Image (cartoon, rainbow, N blue to C red; front, side):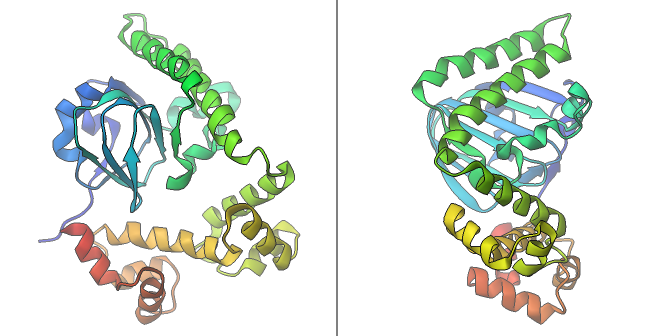
Amino acid sequence: MKKTIPLYEICTIDRTVHQDLMVERLATYQDKHYANLHKPHRHTFYHLVLFTKGKGAHTIDFSQFKIKPYQIYFMAPGQVHSWHFESPMEGYLVHFNAGLFSTFLQRPDYIQQFQFFNGNSENGVYNLPVDLHDKVTSLMEAVLKEMDNTQRNLDMIRVLLLELFIHIDRRCVNEKTKNIPQQKLITLNQFKQLIEKHYRLLRLPKEYAELMYITPNYLNALCNDVVGKSAGELIRDRILLEAKRFLTNADMDISEISYELNFQDNSYFTRFFKKSTGMTPEAFRKKMTQ
């Protein structure tokens, strides 16, 4: 019998909530949904969770993170994740569809400016500085209060969430990169956006360098300097991640996945996958579905 990683929409989790938004205390959410939380699954929506108490682990796109109090996680649609709680948890959880912000401030891409929503698990986990604890929890309490208001105003909730995002962006994201020249960050971000757009067709750093009007050597040096990986590694990492995501879908056979990722044939895809992970695609799929 085939096993497919479940894909959840907000309305399938709780039919009583607003179609674009769900906000809940983590303890309440855990009580209602833990039977599904500890199994690998994915969402069609953006997701964030702030832990204030408890311990355990969170696996996002096949990388595991140890949960700590006042740690916040951000996820984009399509990422595969699962929770592994070792104690009762406290905190806050927010689900929202892209539509919640797409028409706000006449900026359809407003959310995309925040690095933590780019779908990279390494950019989506932050330990909050102590002096930010009260501010972030007060914002989450204000969101919950507005959600319970009989005259609920979605614009108020949008503003509160955006304030939260901006605080995290300033204090956590920018803190990591404050010693890196701004121009390098802009160029690297442009490269990552191009990878996201073209990774199924463009495989060589020189192809991206041409689109960016820079030399392949400069692009490679930049990537090594800022993230400690070559440009080629970043491209291969993105292809590998999508391959793993496809492999969690038991309805797709290896030839379909190979075709979707634009490999010449199944054997080429298998060699690529095994060289990167140490196991065949079939072995990885078996491990994930057990």
